[in-house]
Image 1 (cartoon, one colour):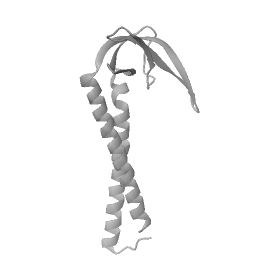
Image 2 (cartoon, rainbow, N blue to C red; image 1 turned 90 degrees about the vertical axis):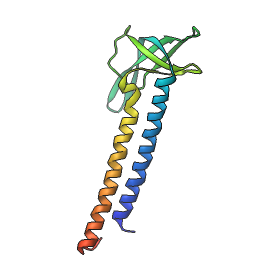
Image 3 (cartoon, rainbow, N blue to C red; image 1 turned 45 degrees about the vertical axis):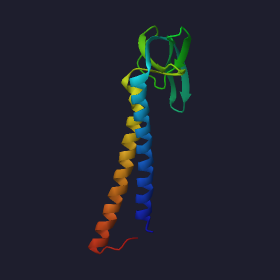
Image 4 (spheres, one colour; image 1 turned 60 degrees about the vertical axis):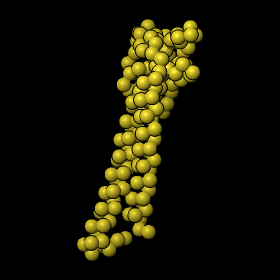
Length: 143
């Protein structure tokens, strides 16, 4: 197998896996939006997380479930929130510990990013196969 075919196969495989992950995340988010309990929450604090490039503050949200229990969670994205700000929280009644803020980036960024990278990988794989095919048909030997 030529290195171009290996590259194409790898790229198509990775792309398909990323697209499958994006589809799973999309379906999961749609399910959350359609069947979750929606309650108001409040930004009560910020959790600082460090990385190589510095640190980022992630909002800590507090909300009260329909049964009266108080829960706190830290968002998965930094977001542009102020302490004391009200937000809408989505959670499954059976699993309030896995709540999410009802904002576009919090809900959809993961599936959009995976989908975009998946499409890019599939495109590279298809492009590589087409390039290899055109080289073969034009008589240029493959390395």
